[in-house]
Image (cartoon, rainbow, N blue to C red; front, side, top):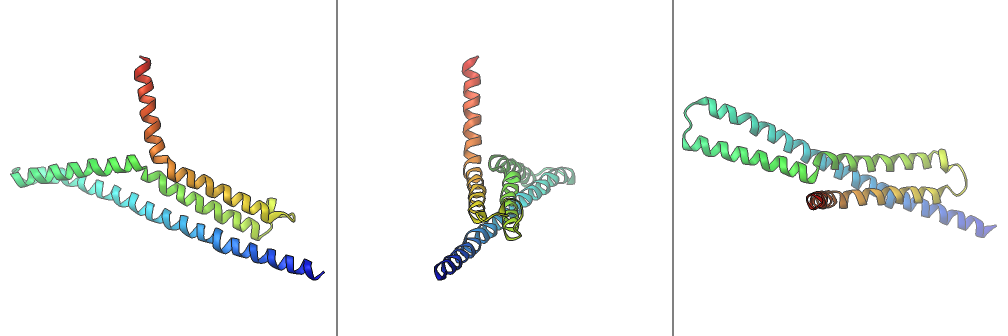
Length: 165
């Protein structure tokens, strides 16, 4: 009887440790990354809009001296760079994926803590670990590979299209 109580206490400690050190840490990580990525995405879009709106103002203010022309070129180049970075790194998509991972982790944690859905039976901790690790695996694969994979797959698709003609 004493052994069973010790085993249950040990399992409770393992569950608490997993929730605190794995789930909560990952929720915090993905939330922080989502906020940073969202901030980068929004600021780059705001800067692009501001730069784009300054060009017609500079042109209509008066005669285009060399300084005005240089400023217009710099603003135009900056717009192209910001839009290019947004497209290559898919900043509008990345922050949503980080947020999605954070929300899924919170959801699974709440289902587990309230013994809902698949967490009703005795083996619910194993289900929790499997579901959490699956979410993390999918989130990691998406974050790490989506930029290069998109670029590489588009490149190879274009190569295949041109070679088939």
